[in-house]
Amino acid sequence: MSPMSNHRARSSSPSSDQPTRRDLLVGAAVAAVAASAARHARAEGAARPVAVASANGLEAVRRAVERMAAGVAPVDAAVDGVAIVEADPEDVTVGLGGLPNADGVVQLDACCMDGPTMRAGAVAALEGFRHPARVALEVMRRTTRVLLVGEGAARFARSIGLPEEDLLTERARKIWLYWKANMSDRDDWVEFPGQVDDPDVAWYIAKYGVIRPTGTINLCAVDAAGNIGGTTSTSGLAFKMPGRVGDSPVIGAGLYVDNEVGAAGSTGRGESVIEVAGAHTAVELMRGGASPTDACLGALRRIVSATRVPALLDDRGRPNFDVKFYAVNRVGEVGSAAMWSGGKFAVCRAGGEPELLDCAHVYEKV
Ligand code: GLY
Image (cartoon, rainbow, N blue to C red; front, side):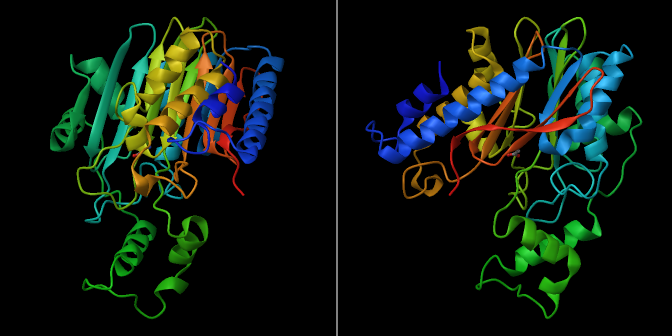
């Protein structure tokens, strides 16, 4: 399935199948980017171990490949890699320092999956533990269950001796208060003098503007023997409804691994990924012969056709949000695609340095 045909099937609006000239131009751009990404991935050969991740995972893919080269299983290597970002307070979308929910509480979601055993573990709305991917790994290893949520997940993490802490950093708290002050002119909170000049608040405004980030880290890894593992970890949608859970801890949505085929994961608007079982869709497309890049574009195409709520569409009927998929197949070819142009993804191979590559995309930002 070519990216071009993916795009044409979508057209400019879910209700129209007549592509405009602009659609054809965008489609051609998609095809060129996808072909270039596929060429890049293949030109490198399929050297393994290899790890692919969201752009915030540049150091995570390095660590994952180092771990696999030392004999660590891909799922453990993936969780070890992601731990770097979970512990980094500068990343406000994952782990420590993640932006809190509407009540100012940091609730984390994560999952992992192990290809050789086809076992999975996950936690959702977990409070007080900076490494939710590690907790998910322990759910997978120590229990017969897959998904623990809320206080039950915290009690499990406590019971196995993981350290507990307040994950709300000063930076995240200040950004949350800024969001509260700008939510409505009919509530009790207003902007106070100097609030937007605070360096942490100014940083947030410059980076995200009015967008509520759904940043996340996904990392999929293949070792030298072709065994596969992956993990996804997030603090979820910034300022979310308490208890809201996105795609990241949902097996088949934010992550799926099949040792016979490959692995895929996602970042971005989680509800849209859940509704098309996004990561599972990408893996099934690879099972049918798609390259990792084409599989990611195919999963995005499902989101385009499933997105019908007017509030989620722009004036041309296109999704007004971003989602990115990341994929690797069992021979070690990698790919990634985003709804909108400009995205990057991280890759590292045995013996190489980690690098950021361009994602293929469905639509060109203007
Ligand atoms: N993809 C992260 C989330 O929607 O929570």
